[in-house]
Length: 159
Image (cartoon, rainbow, N blue to C red; front, side):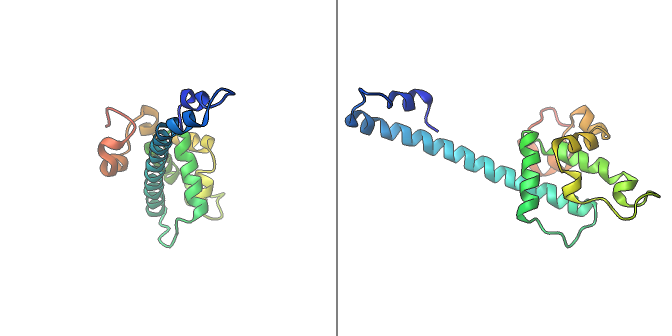
């Protein structure tokens, strides 16, 4: 996006067409740079969503599950809420995997309750699961994030 200064300087009664034409290259460069940053962020978040999905699928033994548009959107929404700190979601999934009701082994559970849509339905749900995990509470980088992302993880001083 162009800086407010550039965009605002082109608005007004006294701005002439030559002034607009002269400012366009800078504005277009700024717009292009912002689009590149957004594009890179989108690609990065998409890769993180795939990592979360693969981990969930493995952890809960959903071998035939597919990362469809709805699931991708859900995971990316949670990633955006945690500022792309994928460790928060991975720790939450770890904690959920230890819950008998989620696994379907609790006496009052009629079936597994391990759908991605349930486990990651909103930020509050991620926090509730995360609070059960020492790694989440301590703010550590999840081992899977460390393995696949290395220095790209958003937390510093990884475990």
